[in-house]
Amino acid sequence: MLHYRFKNLKMKKISILIPCYNEEASLPLLYNELVKLMDSHTNYAWEVLTVNDGSKDRTLEVIKDLRKKDNRICYVDLSRNFGKEKAMLAGFDYVTGDCMVIMDADLQHPPYVVNEMITKWEEGYDDVYAKRKSRGKEPWLRKQFSLFFYKILQKTTKIEILPNVGDFRLLDRKCIESLKQLRETERYTKGMYCWIGYRKTAVEFEQQDRQAGQSSWNFLSLLSLAIEGIVSFTTFPLKIATIVGIFTSLCAFIYMIYVIIKAILFGDPVSGFPTLLSVILFLGGIQLLALGIIGEYIGRIFHETKGRPVYIVRESVSYTHLRAHETSQ
Image (tube, rainbow, N blue to C red; front, side, top):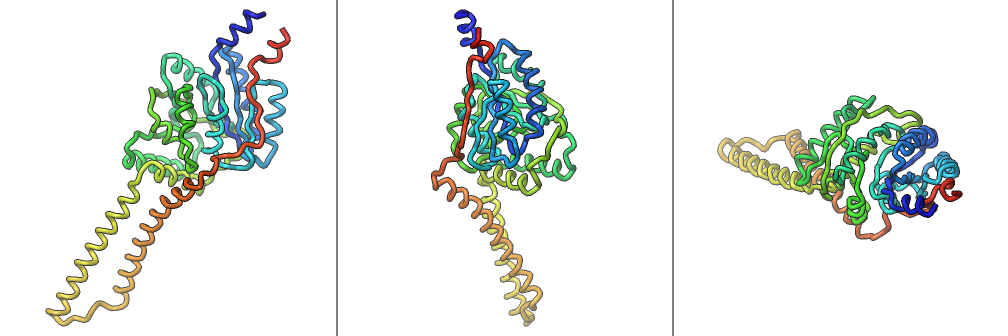
């Protein structure tokens, strides 16, 4: 028995991180798939860490029920809804594995892909990210908006932002420790994965359709995340505001010289109300755009200088190393 326990202590541990918001219908389905995955790799110890991000349904109760029958299921219950990005940081802080797999609770990330991720990890890769072959039954407009966003981000940042790549990935412990050091409250984790570096490789997969429940992401929340990604990883919008301001001022100066010369040489009156109104509205719009861009950056400075914790935990249950049937031996 002592030899058996010592052998288990030497096992590598794989953690699975699952951020959850109103996923009571999806979690039992996901658990059934995860059991197949974990039971097919008995040479690893497993931990499934669910982060309940202020769910309004029975998500926490479902997690606790799963915990009662399988103590590999752990959870962190946040005091309110902080958002997926911050919920993932809570997961980074609490996972105990030698590596961590991040996946959604809705089964759009098929658990069988983790098999290939583990193989790549054992080959020495630190960040094994899942790249979508297709985006499932995603609305056409949302898909085009997403691709356009990645094109902008790639052209404006100094680090490579991977297109068609989300949070579904395996991260080695060294990556986890590096991500834990990035404590900003305004977070865009997809960019952070690229920022920290390390040895990366891809596995391709077909994104599945949501099996149960409804997505909490709508167009406005995705737009907000896109703005977060751009503002968090590049100051290019500020440069655009500067360039547009210089160009507009130059055009206005040239037009002013033209009007003065025309009035002196030909005695023409200054252009009437419609022209004046158009110029005022155009310049006012440019000024408001520049102020809006500056405001986005100042707002983030405001939030960061408060020094508040990124999240607050109401309750947590951590990994129990020896499973019930092992303890009884």
